[in-house]
Length: 429
Picture 1 (cartoon, helix red, strand yellow):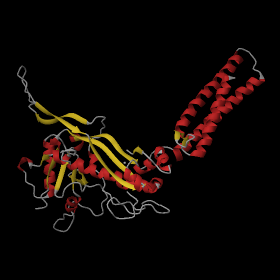
Picture 2: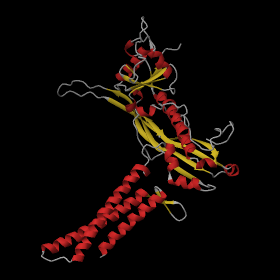
Picture 3: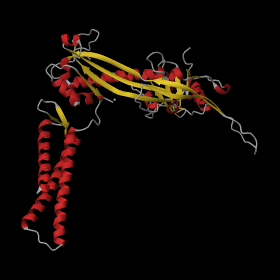
């Protein structure tokens, strides 16, 4: 009897979950209206209860088989109870599977969502924004602004309008590329201490039996990459909390993009002074034509940069330059007006001397960086991009405003400066 009651409890829990999920959407709510458990959490708990019920049904069936094997005759009521229990357990599992499919299809997960979508869909933010007068702050980690009607500083125009449709046309944005060149990593500390390779002297040679073996030198120096914070904030009317499309566009188009924009500039050109990251260009080895070879064009210079890194035993895997310089190279023609490198009808990714070319405005004009980027440096993310909203400010209270802040924390460790070569292309006098 206790086993049948367990099955009944599981079925009741599943029924309650299905009804609540229909009424409330993805999140269950407590009497005060705040979210408690997600549908996925309740589905998992329901599954555990159903599994226990199925085990109980198996026990009933095994008991019946044992009696049958011993020659005992089951009563009609016992057979009916066993049949009913099996049918109920099967229906419970089918209902649970359907619930999970519905969650995956329309209610669950952050897959494919932008940073702004993850923020506005966060249950805590929804609860915060639904308050008539939101007070306090709410933080959401988003891991890829203002509604004033003026053009004054701190204003982005009239974003709050009736029948809000969000930003239909994406604002101009730079494509971020430098991070993809580097080895990824994470840290839970405020600094990364490591040994930077300084010099390798290879004295390996054939040696006769009994003779002294030559000694090679591999020199390191202690280095520290401090975790730096990149952040900015904007002020908006508190009504924007209830305007999900505008909030999502602001986070994706401006706050999150602003962090990535400054991150790329720091990774490439950071001075390492104060709160700046030590960037790749700052730490790179200066270009010096090796082997007494002479370069007469920008393409020649890039070939010798590749050679310089290769002679240091770090075969490069990429070239970074300004889009203007890359366009100038692609537009070069021979005496008959035919393109030497560029192909106006081509669709292949840009390459030069067999290496991919990364064109970014973060690189200065008439400059280039060539290197084995994955061997030269590594990014350590301390805190993924996080968005925080707060009304905790006297000015916010009196003006009915809310502050929206985005920030991230990361460090860049540069292991081998010889793997990076930086210099002038010689195109501009």
